[in-house]
Length: 279
Image (cartoon, rainbow, N blue to C red):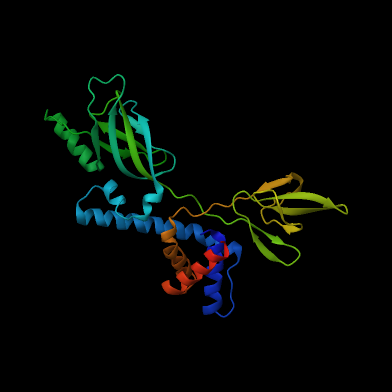
Protein backbone atom coordinates (compact mmCIF):
# COMPACT_ATOMS: atom_id res chain seq x y z
CA UNK A 1 0.00 0.00 0.00
CA UNK A 2 1.42 3.37 -1.00
CA UNK A 3 0.60 7.03 -0.35
CA UNK A 4 -2.00 7.19 -3.10
CA UNK A 5 -3.92 4.25 -1.63
CA UNK A 6 -3.89 5.86 1.82
CA UNK A 7 -4.81 9.28 0.41
CA UNK A 8 -7.75 7.82 -1.53
CA UNK A 9 -9.03 5.85 1.48
CA UNK A 10 -8.92 8.94 3.69
CA UNK A 11 -10.87 10.98 1.15
CA UNK A 12 -13.41 8.20 0.78
CA UNK A 13 -13.94 8.25 4.54
CA UNK A 14 -14.12 12.04 4.59
CA UNK A 15 -16.66 12.02 1.79
CA UNK A 16 -18.81 9.56 3.72
CA UNK A 17 -18.59 11.25 7.13
CA UNK A 18 -18.21 14.97 6.42
CA UNK A 19 -20.38 15.40 3.34
CA UNK A 20 -17.93 16.01 0.57
CA UNK A 21 -14.92 17.57 2.30
CA UNK A 22 -11.61 16.34 0.93
CA UNK A 23 -8.04 16.32 2.09
CA UNK A 24 -5.66 18.21 -0.18
CA UNK A 25 -2.22 16.77 -0.99
CA UNK A 26 -0.65 19.66 0.92
CA UNK A 27 -2.63 18.94 4.06
CA UNK A 28 -1.86 15.25 3.73
CA UNK A 29 1.88 15.95 3.55
CA UNK A 30 1.74 18.20 6.60
CA UNK A 31 -0.16 15.62 8.65
CA UNK A 32 1.50 12.27 7.88
CA UNK A 33 4.96 13.04 9.34
CA UNK A 34 3.33 13.93 12.66
CA UNK A 35 1.23 10.77 12.67
CA UNK A 36 4.23 8.66 11.72
CA UNK A 37 6.30 9.90 14.67
CA UNK A 38 3.38 9.57 17.08
CA UNK A 39 2.88 5.93 16.12
CA UNK A 40 6.61 5.25 16.41
CA UNK A 41 6.72 6.66 19.95
CA UNK A 42 3.49 4.87 20.87
CA UNK A 43 4.88 1.51 19.78
CA UNK A 44 8.13 2.19 21.65
CA UNK A 45 6.17 2.86 24.86
CA UNK A 46 4.17 -0.34 24.32
CA UNK A 47 7.38 -2.31 23.79
CA UNK A 48 8.95 -0.94 26.97
CA UNK A 49 5.77 -1.71 28.90
CA UNK A 50 5.79 -5.29 27.67
CA UNK A 51 9.44 -5.68 28.66
CA UNK A 52 8.72 -4.28 32.12
CA UNK A 53 5.88 -6.75 32.65
CA UNK A 54 7.54 -9.82 31.15
CA UNK A 55 11.13 -9.27 32.25
CA UNK A 56 12.59 -10.32 28.89
CA UNK A 57 15.30 -8.46 26.98
CA UNK A 58 14.00 -5.61 24.87
CA UNK A 59 15.81 -6.94 21.78
CA UNK A 60 14.01 -10.28 22.22
CA UNK A 61 10.65 -8.58 22.77
CA UNK A 62 11.03 -6.82 19.44
CA UNK A 63 10.69 -10.16 17.63
CA UNK A 64 7.44 -11.02 19.39
CA UNK A 65 5.19 -9.11 17.04
CA UNK A 66 6.31 -5.50 17.51
CA UNK A 67 5.81 -3.42 14.33
CA UNK A 68 9.02 -1.57 15.26
CA UNK A 69 10.96 -4.47 13.77
CA UNK A 70 10.79 -2.49 10.51
CA UNK A 71 13.21 0.05 12.03
CA UNK A 72 15.77 -2.33 13.58
CA UNK A 73 19.37 -1.90 12.48
CA UNK A 74 22.70 -3.55 13.36
CA UNK A 75 26.07 -1.86 13.03
CA UNK A 76 29.61 -2.71 14.15
CA UNK A 77 31.54 0.09 15.84
CA UNK A 78 35.19 0.14 16.92
CA UNK A 79 35.81 1.18 20.52
CA UNK A 80 38.00 4.29 20.70
CA UNK A 81 39.06 5.68 24.07
CA UNK A 82 36.43 3.53 25.75
CA UNK A 83 33.58 4.91 23.62
CA UNK A 84 31.69 4.41 20.38
CA UNK A 85 29.74 6.99 18.40
CA UNK A 86 26.17 5.96 17.63
CA UNK A 87 24.83 6.21 14.03
CA UNK A 88 23.22 9.46 12.92
CA UNK A 89 19.81 7.80 12.57
CA UNK A 90 19.98 6.23 16.06
CA UNK A 91 16.83 6.69 18.13
CA UNK A 92 16.73 3.94 20.78
CA UNK A 93 19.30 1.39 21.92
CA UNK A 94 18.26 -2.28 21.96
CA UNK A 95 21.37 -4.36 22.63
CA UNK A 96 25.17 -4.30 22.53
CA UNK A 97 27.57 -7.22 22.06
CA UNK A 98 31.31 -6.69 22.46
CA UNK A 99 33.43 -8.73 20.04
CA UNK A 100 37.18 -9.15 20.58
CA UNK A 101 39.23 -7.42 17.88
CA UNK A 102 42.52 -8.53 16.36
CA UNK A 103 44.47 -7.10 19.31
CA UNK A 104 42.35 -8.81 21.97
CA UNK A 105 43.99 -11.27 24.37
CA UNK A 106 40.96 -13.57 24.47
CA UNK A 107 38.07 -14.61 22.24
CA UNK A 108 35.22 -14.09 24.68
CA UNK A 109 32.11 -12.29 23.45
CA UNK A 110 30.53 -10.07 26.10
CA UNK A 111 26.99 -8.75 26.28
CA UNK A 112 27.01 -5.12 27.36
CA UNK A 113 24.23 -3.89 29.63
CA UNK A 114 22.97 -0.34 29.11
CA UNK A 115 22.70 1.53 32.43
CA UNK A 116 21.44 4.90 33.61
CA UNK A 117 23.74 7.68 34.77
CA UNK A 118 22.78 6.84 38.35
CA UNK A 119 23.79 3.20 37.97
CA UNK A 120 26.98 4.23 36.19
CA UNK A 121 27.97 6.46 39.09
CA UNK A 122 27.18 3.67 41.55
CA UNK A 123 29.49 1.37 39.61
CA UNK A 124 32.21 4.04 39.69
CA UNK A 125 31.90 4.09 43.48
CA UNK A 126 32.22 0.32 43.49
CA UNK A 127 35.43 0.52 41.48
CA UNK A 128 36.87 3.11 43.89
CA UNK A 129 36.23 0.69 46.74
CA UNK A 130 38.36 -1.88 44.87
CA UNK A 131 35.42 -4.21 44.32
CA UNK A 132 35.72 -6.24 41.12
CA UNK A 133 33.31 -5.51 38.26
CA UNK A 134 33.09 -8.46 35.89
CA UNK A 135 30.16 -7.59 33.60
CA UNK A 136 30.61 -4.79 31.05
CA UNK A 137 28.22 -1.87 31.10
CA UNK A 138 27.63 1.15 28.89
CA UNK A 139 25.74 4.41 29.14
CA UNK A 140 24.56 6.74 26.41
CA UNK A 141 26.08 10.22 26.66
CA UNK A 142 25.79 13.37 24.56
CA UNK A 143 22.57 14.79 23.15
CA UNK A 144 23.69 16.19 19.80
CA UNK A 145 26.19 13.43 18.93
CA UNK A 146 25.21 10.42 21.08
CA UNK A 147 27.97 8.06 22.18
CA UNK A 148 28.18 5.00 24.41
CA UNK A 149 30.76 5.07 27.17
CA UNK A 150 31.93 1.67 28.47
CA UNK A 151 33.33 0.04 31.55
CA UNK A 152 35.58 -3.02 31.04
CA UNK A 153 35.30 -2.81 27.22
CA UNK A 154 38.50 -1.26 25.90
CA UNK A 155 39.99 -0.42 22.51
CA UNK A 156 40.68 -4.08 21.71
CA UNK A 157 36.94 -4.60 21.13
CA UNK A 158 34.38 -3.91 18.44
CA UNK A 159 30.77 -3.55 19.53
CA UNK A 160 27.76 -4.81 17.59
CA UNK A 161 25.05 -2.25 18.26
CA UNK A 162 21.40 -3.20 17.71
CA UNK A 163 19.21 -0.14 17.68
CA UNK A 164 16.02 1.41 16.39
CA UNK A 165 16.63 4.07 13.80
CA UNK A 166 14.44 7.10 13.45
CA UNK A 167 11.72 6.68 10.80
CA UNK A 168 12.24 8.57 7.59
CA UNK A 169 9.87 11.48 6.94
CA UNK A 170 7.04 10.28 4.67
CA UNK A 171 6.14 12.49 1.73
CA UNK A 172 3.75 12.14 -1.22
CA UNK A 173 5.04 13.91 -4.33
CA UNK A 174 2.58 14.79 -7.06
CA UNK A 175 1.80 17.05 -9.98
CA UNK A 176 -1.47 18.44 -11.34
CA UNK A 177 -2.67 17.60 -14.83
CA UNK A 178 -3.54 20.95 -16.39
CA UNK A 179 -5.97 19.29 -18.80
CA UNK A 180 -8.38 18.13 -16.08
CA UNK A 181 -6.97 19.56 -12.79
CA UNK A 182 -6.52 16.04 -11.45
CA UNK A 183 -3.69 15.11 -9.11
CA UNK A 184 -1.11 12.67 -10.49
CA UNK A 185 0.69 10.71 -7.80
CA UNK A 186 4.44 10.50 -8.42
CA UNK A 187 5.96 7.44 -6.72
CA UNK A 188 9.72 7.04 -6.55
CA UNK A 189 11.16 6.85 -10.07
CA UNK A 190 8.67 9.27 -11.62
CA UNK A 191 9.85 12.69 -12.77
CA UNK A 192 8.80 15.85 -14.56
CA UNK A 193 10.72 17.31 -17.50
CA UNK A 194 10.28 20.63 -19.23
CA UNK A 195 9.87 21.34 -22.95
CA UNK A 196 9.04 24.37 -25.08
CA UNK A 197 5.72 24.70 -26.90
CA UNK A 198 4.90 27.88 -28.82
CA UNK A 199 7.62 29.77 -26.96
CA UNK A 200 6.16 28.64 -23.63
CA UNK A 201 7.87 26.33 -21.13
CA UNK A 202 5.69 23.40 -20.12
CA UNK A 203 6.21 20.23 -18.11
CA UNK A 204 5.56 16.58 -18.85
CA UNK A 205 5.23 13.86 -16.24
CA UNK A 206 7.03 10.54 -16.83
CA UNK A 207 6.80 7.22 -15.03
CA UNK A 208 9.75 5.05 -13.98
CA UNK A 209 9.78 3.43 -17.45
CA UNK A 210 10.27 6.85 -19.10
CA UNK A 211 6.73 6.78 -20.50
CA UNK A 212 4.78 10.04 -20.65
CA UNK A 213 1.93 10.09 -18.14
CA UNK A 214 0.71 13.61 -18.88
CA UNK A 215 1.90 16.21 -21.39
CA UNK A 216 1.05 19.40 -19.49
CA UNK A 217 1.37 19.43 -15.72
CA UNK A 218 1.94 21.88 -12.90
CA UNK A 219 4.60 20.74 -10.44
CA UNK A 220 4.26 22.31 -6.95
CA UNK A 221 7.90 21.71 -6.04
CA UNK A 222 9.37 24.02 -8.65
CA UNK A 223 11.55 26.68 -7.00
CA UNK A 224 9.97 30.10 -6.59
CA UNK A 225 13.02 31.63 -8.30
CA UNK A 226 12.42 30.40 -11.84
CA UNK A 227 15.91 31.50 -12.92
CA UNK A 228 17.28 28.44 -11.15
CA UNK A 229 14.85 25.91 -12.59
CA UNK A 230 16.31 22.58 -13.71
CA UNK A 231 15.21 20.66 -16.80
CA UNK A 232 14.24 17.56 -14.81
CA UNK A 233 12.88 17.05 -11.30
CA UNK A 234 12.81 13.56 -9.83
CA UNK A 235 9.99 12.54 -7.54
CA UNK A 236 10.57 13.31 -3.86
CA UNK A 237 8.18 10.62 -2.64
CA UNK A 238 9.19 8.76 0.52
CA UNK A 239 6.84 5.90 1.41
CA UNK A 240 5.94 4.75 4.90
CA UNK A 241 8.19 2.00 6.23
CA UNK A 242 5.71 0.09 8.37
CA UNK A 243 4.87 -3.45 7.36
CA UNK A 244 1.66 -3.87 5.39
CA UNK A 245 -0.21 -5.36 8.36
CA UNK A 246 0.20 -2.06 10.22
CA UNK A 247 -1.43 0.24 7.67
CA UNK A 248 -4.89 -0.07 9.22
CA UNK A 249 -3.51 1.53 12.41
CA UNK A 250 -1.83 4.24 10.34
CA UNK A 251 -4.98 5.18 8.41
CA UNK A 252 -7.14 5.16 11.53
CA UNK A 253 -4.72 7.49 13.31
CA UNK A 254 -4.83 9.95 10.40
CA UNK A 255 -8.63 9.81 10.43
CA UNK A 256 -8.69 10.43 14.18
CA UNK A 257 -6.62 13.58 13.59
CA UNK A 258 -9.39 14.69 11.23
CA UNK A 259 -12.10 14.01 13.80
CA UNK A 260 -13.31 10.68 12.41
CA UNK A 261 -13.51 7.73 14.86
CA UNK A 262 -11.64 4.54 13.99
CA UNK A 263 -13.69 2.26 11.74
CA UNK A 264 -11.59 -0.83 11.17
CA UNK A 265 -14.04 -2.78 9.03
CA UNK A 266 -14.83 0.05 6.63
CA UNK A 267 -11.18 1.09 6.29
CA UNK A 268 -10.22 -2.54 5.63
CA UNK A 269 -12.87 -2.79 2.89
CA UNK A 270 -11.64 0.40 1.22
CA UNK A 271 -8.07 -0.87 1.51
CA UNK A 272 -9.00 -4.07 -0.32
CA UNK A 273 -10.62 -2.03 -3.10
CA UNK A 274 -7.51 0.15 -3.41
CA UNK A 275 -5.24 -2.88 -3.62
CA UNK A 276 -7.44 -4.46 -6.30
CA UNK A 277 -7.16 -1.27 -8.37
CA UNK A 278 -3.41 -1.73 -8.46
CA UNK A 279 -3.53 -5.36 -9.58
